[in-house]
Image (tube, rainbow, N blue to C red; front, side, top):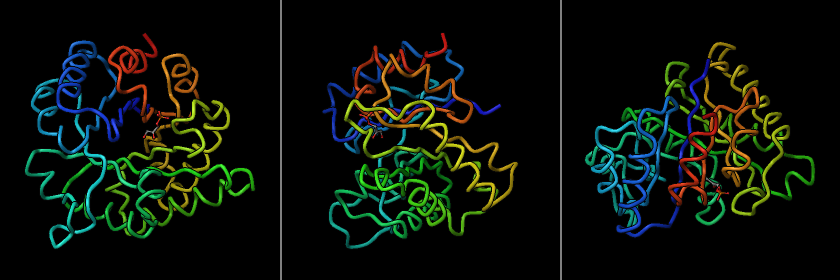
Length: 250
Ligand code: 13P
């Protein structure tokens, strides 16, 4: 049995007052829940949100990190800085990083290996664009992204990798992949993992779906055989919505 894992990616939203009230609301609403829950605030709110969620069952993740430990990289945040404020989970390879910051599969692979070296849990994102799906290339693209991202990652380290399948055409568009479409791709990803490692690793890898997950579609998506969780954007910014998604089965 794979534990369900619901994560909220706050993206470039929440100034401190909103971050504080979101964290406080979720702490109250989600105590005692059996699923794994993580929120990913922007860098400026990480320490604050960590403080608020200290001792709760909600983990805190960064949304990105540099591929270097330190250096002349104006504007970047390193894994050591995250560690320093006791963050130990990071999202890597989000499609917005690929799209707007030109992140490549190779760079994402470097980041993943660096995060693992420092003991982090990683939420690795993959997913095809609309053009790629319309030209029937979605399996090829997601397979390539997954294989490159995991190059040099050991089977033992796979216990610290969560994969978030986020079709780009479903992000922030209100258009979700159908539960069947998402589940099919999750099965494909699982078979890629089985090929890279073995069936045991594949069966225990948590694969989240992301892309317009809302309270009214969460249950249907999360009931599918290979959908083990959700990476939620817009709906993670509202206490009631994220609560409803995290409590999809209650
Ligand atoms: P939305 O839920 O807003 O579509 O965003 C999904 C996402 O990109 C989460 O990382």
